[in-house]
Image (tube, rainbow, N blue to C red):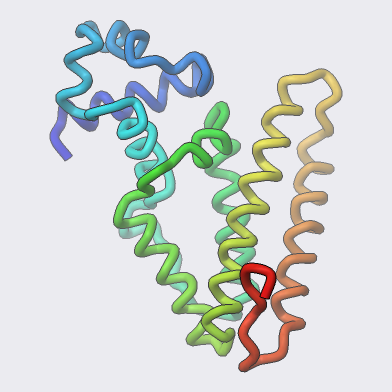
Length: 191
């Protein structure tokens, strides 16, 4: 990634944290960088491309920070879920941003498929592994979107209670995946 492109990306993430996803505009970002909005399109052909780059940047840890995918598959899913939620909570509207992506980037796709492969290698049928990872990702995004929306209101629950509720829901998903018979693919698409 070129230095100027990386600078635009960093500024977009900073701006997201300040004004939220609805306030993040190419015009405001250009003003922050001291350029005209059209200049940003040399680095990102559309706002969607910028949002995709933001998601890819946030979900792709540095190579030396990726934990090894070993240990029980249940722990791998827990680690994925907890890490995703913390990442989303670290940024204003982080969960909403994650749900905007069209192209998550090669590294994120590789990590996702690597997790499915790791679960399969641990004895989880491939279909079940894919469903389990998809379900956990959807749960984390939905839970965290709601959590961030409520945080803006005065009736937000304390973090400790939100963490406990999150873990309880996650355990329901993992327990359900663990209860599926080995060697029997999970039902998909109503079938």
